[in-house]
Image (cartoon, rainbow, N blue to C red):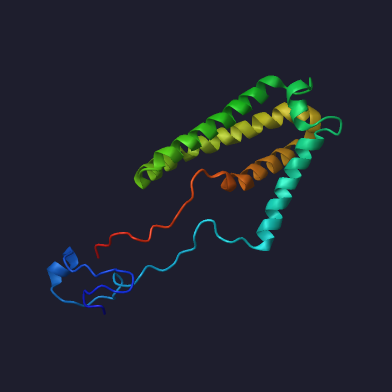
Length: 184
């Protein structure tokens, strides 16, 4: 027990909270006077298996983008190939754009307060999920004439590569907050 005196990191037990005023006793587990435990900081160290998996997703996506249909690359196909159904492709791109805009909006909204993040993100999850599923189906329908049954694994591979790359594109660094005021 620290007895209310400052300890190593300058942390002090706060005796004037409601818990101490009501009971009058000094028994506690000394949680306030101990420095907080070091939680794993962001980004955490990755195992070699995670690194290999991430590399495989990214390498597969690069292969898809570079080789396309073996005659021209994926980007050229999206712009110039007549076999692609254009309306579903454009609607799928619009759906993905809406999802990206919504993610950016909610992350900027959450930058200030965590309560807003919890309310806006949980209320929007069904909408985001449905929009993503509809976009995936539209992309599958639009690209089916080129790759047929391989369209679904191709799109899933591109999606997973985007998910793997996304944490490296974070605008700010997340730091654990260690100097929080405690009222217990």
